[in-house]
Amino acid sequence: MLEEQGVVNAMQSWNLTLPVYDSQGNTALYTVALPYYVPAAAPKFSRMVLDGKAFKSSELVDTNLMAQQQLTENMPTILLRQALRVYAKDQIRKSTAKDDDVGNLIFNVWNTLTEQPDTRSWQTLPSVVNGASQIVKAGSHTLTLDGQDYTFDVRDRQTTLVWVSRQGGNATIWHKQLGRM
View 1 (cartoon, one colour):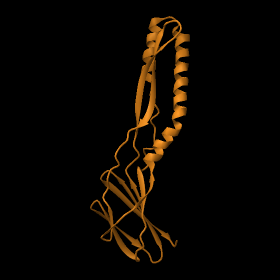
View 2 (cartoon, rainbow, N blue to C red):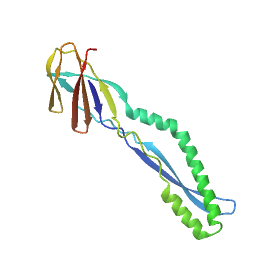
View 3 (cartoon, helix red, strand yellow):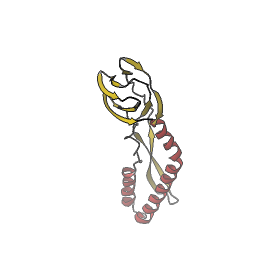
View 4 (cartoon, rainbow, N blue to C red):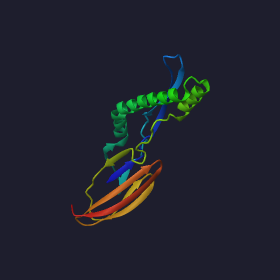
């Protein structure tokens, strides 16, 4: 049995606007935008019951932790790109606006409004994946979770995979005969 629970947390946006002064006394505003994950409590799901008996599954993977680790590993590259972007925007501002106060103002507004972090994340993946196995007799079996019953058949000396996907209060259940294993 494989059980998917929830979806990966969404990345949030952190923005900080900094004034940058050049040697000529001009001031420009640049926004640094970085993604981050908000620590969130994992939702609690009821236990699964097979043929009237509750059984426990074991965590196979916590995808939230994987996504957070990837962001941590990518942060030096993200910071370098931010620094290069600020430098490039400053060079464009200097070459275009020169000593024009209106041009500097327009570039300051443009820099502040256009800077957004890349918050694309793993949101289409389950938050946690659990696994469990149970040896049962051939025949019809009923899996119950959240008041929902799902009946499936197990053939003699064959393996059946039951896949449960739980998001919020909804559960979707599939099963497939895998044959002899």
